[in-house]
Length: 100
Image (cartoon, rainbow, N blue to C red; front, top):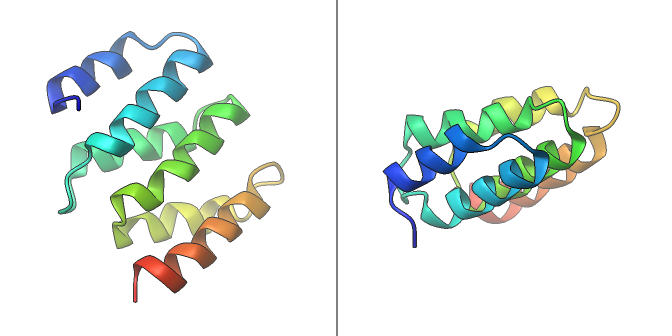
């Protein structure tokens, strides 16, 4: 498992979509159970990335952290033509199983 500083380093050095996706996946596994603004901002930054694959990876990372704070950025993504259905599905899953 990676620590906070290693995750920050992976994100800081990520230059390609594949590097971003790798960093987001590792961050999703390393994220603490309690809300953490630094990790949260990393995922939101991924949700706003120009590459669709990175955005999908960030959306898919949200359930691992289980933070209710993901609701707002996911709701915003439901309006995105490319990511709307994916974000809607993730919202439904999290509202049903994670945010009871």
